[in-house]
Length: 471
Image (cartoon, rainbow, N blue to C red; front, top):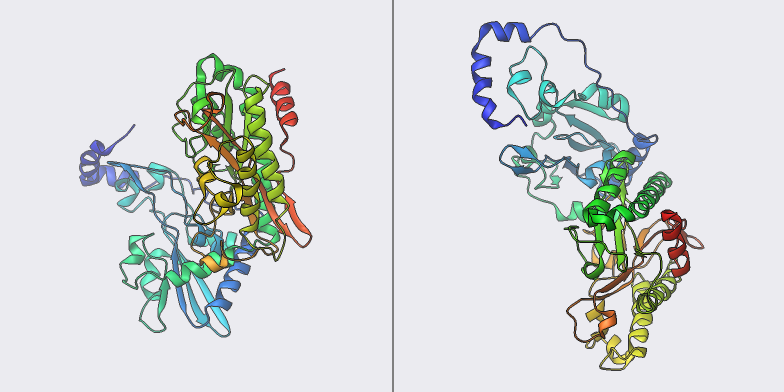
């Protein structure tokens, strides 16, 4: 690829008067229209209204962020800050939102980088952002038309942030241009945003539903690709299969896909995805598509690669499924957030005790000072879901894990059992088995809406799905 070693040549080119004159003319106008999912502008405006009501009289500033350096002069793909996207619907690298108190609320201004024009030195000289090097990009006018928010060039930002009164709440650490004003970092701002984002509106739920539907296509692709994985493609082939679908249906995976076969299935964060896939193994697939609005699904299913569970595999799967069904039964408005986790863990502990795998009684294991059953499930059994796969992480514990469920909350519910290959506390037939079942739900007045209800769940449904995909 073209790299940093070209930049001395750029300096020489820019010093050449003939080149400068010739490169600055003769260009067709670029197509810089901004395409956003229907309803984006209206949803973002409503979100800003909710934030304004929570923080009256405060100036607020948030940045989209910048791409992170991968190595030397190459960058990871850019992904905008989730709070910023929730408030603006904008995913433009370098953009900054400023909300200024006005009347009973706030006036919002979005500061957007202006693409270099052909007559400017950066048109050739800025290989990181110039339309000549990285493709056309929209400027303030296009974003204003698409998002219904006042947009100004980024160079006008100093005027928007002039003075210290009223004080400015800033989400620092995202963009150095904003950090340079030294307003500091507001944990309060991030906490308020996280707690507001817990409750999804109808537009957001629609985006999550679209992400789940796209993820279903990716799971079907993976099952169809199992024979190729067994022939030698391995976990990498399956990861690439899902990620290709995610890229074609949205921005890509909402998080690094976990494709874990055989002894890798008990490894909770197996993102290397470089192992073999054999017909007698289980395959744990934990993956989700992030749609263009940046909302992501988070689904896990565990499959017998050859189409049939062994007795030991089936026993583990059925126990996890019982815990999963019991956990879902606890999802309803007003219920303690921790209820679905406690219920799932009790079912799992009882099953482990029945198998003789607990050194103590079920009640002792479940006590705060016990927890022996957690050897086989050290992770939690669920989390909030939305723009981030582990959404609203900055919320205060009283509004999250120590709080109660409310209508509009989106959750991933994911009990599992994980028997590592080297764990001598379990019999040989269980070693190297990992099973997780994860579904995405939204809390409704009557209980919950199972967004991923189209995914097979019982052991018989799973085996039928695998066999049908291979036929």
